[in-house]
Length: 105
Image (tube, rainbow, N blue to C red; front, top):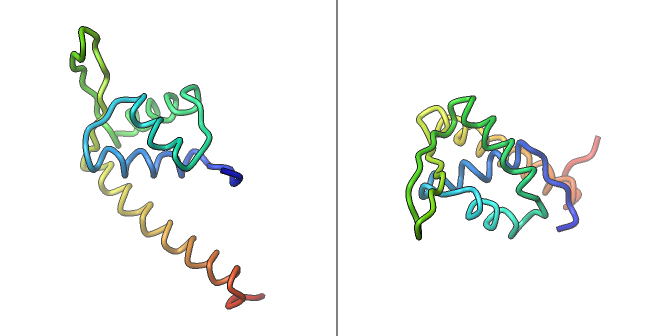
C-alpha cells in the first residue's frame, strides 16, 4: 500500500481483529499486512502498549508443541474500539468529501 499507516490505525485494526476472535501475533500481522506494509518489530511494541493500557489481555496456549501468546480484547478495549470506529467514520467521511469536491475552505 502506498499510504502510510499510523500506530493508532494499527491499534484500531488489532482491536477489530481480536474482537472477532482471540488471535496470536503472527496471525494478527498477516491480517494487517493485507492493507499495510508493517513488520513484526512494529506490531509487537503496539501489542505490548495495548496490553499495558488494558485494551487486551493475553494467555498462552499450546499449538503443535509450542506455546503461542494469544490476545483477547477487554471491556476497555471494546470501548476504545467503539471510539476508534467513530473517529474512523468521521475521518473517512471528511476525506471522501474533500476528494469528491464537497468540502473546501
